[in-house]
Image 1: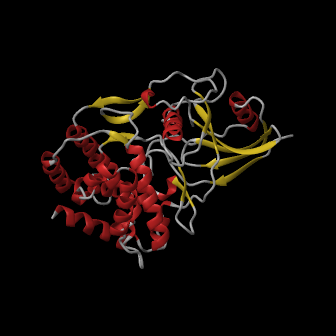
Image 2 (image 1 turned 90 degrees about the vertical axis):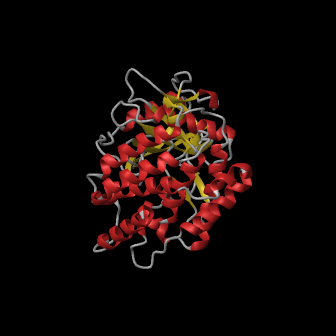
Image 3 (image 1 turned 90 degrees about the horizontal axis):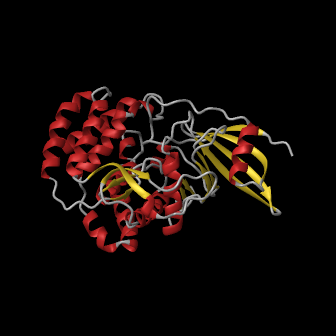
Length: 371
């Protein structure tokens, strides 16, 4: 049966939420998509292909048949032949699928390199649920948001408990190269690129890079003060600091959910996984899911307390010993999450005429930390 090729909008990204200086997703011909799927599932017949506009990677929804069944898959490929975290993402999802109950798409197979096909790429199962815009977190009712936060806490507790890293930095893999096979799901094959043993030193490096961008943002009047504040705060951090797998790329856009209940049906996009202290990962999630950065909009409350309480409750069910260390907020980590929003403020999808009010609220929130 001839395949059909359609295109639909598909909201998302790979590094943070917004990325600068990245290529456009290349369009892959339907015949090539069929070859790519066939290199992983040779017996499958591709029945339908939908090109999905998800960030800058080339992502395709495919429907395949075989063994009397019809199945839905997603194919994710590099936009330009560079890795863009795709091989690592596939291995991380395989580890989480094998070692945790975190809802991640099962990896059907990975092709790291090929003489003619656009690599790297991998094929995953499709999971149910709706993908909502990043900013929609401010429009969820309290009940669904509380459930989403609690389940996020449960998932983070499981993620932080995976024995995979012993230093800080970007997570990479050193497992065998694959030509269509499934990753083995062994966390021993996850490693850290350019590992750093000292967390304050690594954190200072992250802050410096974030503030380099902040100096060119609409909030640049705060950059010098932020630099001094971070320097003092990092010097006063008290350890010990244990590296864990950190999702980091938090946001409603990287989840599939039931919008009526807030139940999480899938956690997507793991290419930007970091090895960080658990508190760092936790505080990022609280800030980004609490929607405080949108509190300048009419009728949008700051729900960080609701999100924090629910996340802690969920975290305690899976890792009660570690949860105790997360009960006290760490302003440094929250501030860095705020800097991320400031740096990419121009990318937020805000109603016309509201930018000034939203900027003012974000700026006042940051100033309250600085004061």
